[in-house]
Length: 126
Ligand SMILES: [Zn+2]
Image (tube, rainbow, N blue to C red):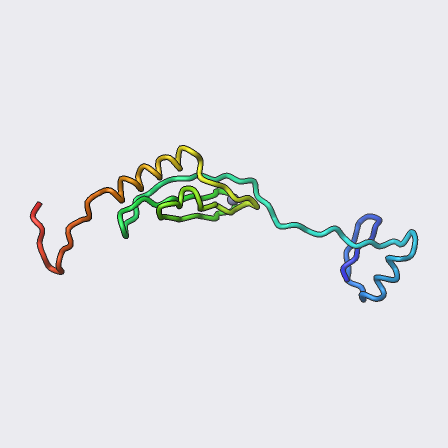
């Protein structure tokens, strides 16, 4: 069991669990259980953007954080609403202006006529 000295320099060390339990039960014992260390948190510094997919031509919602370096890449009819960017200990939604723009671009993408299918080697004259 990990314990530490109550007095400075608060040295931490491992003790047999049975021995540590006995020592911790003694009044004015010189040791204590150190407080749990939480996850390392960064301060969020994220940006959201919308790109065009090279694969299907539709909009792609992207987010990145300069501090924790996490990224989000999502697409689909509800990506702007359902996808959360989880980073720095938080779960962020896209800002309202990005959600609105994504919705507009996705609607435009789904309403656009499909590109004509070409056979391999076929030349299309525009
Ligand atoms: Zn982050």
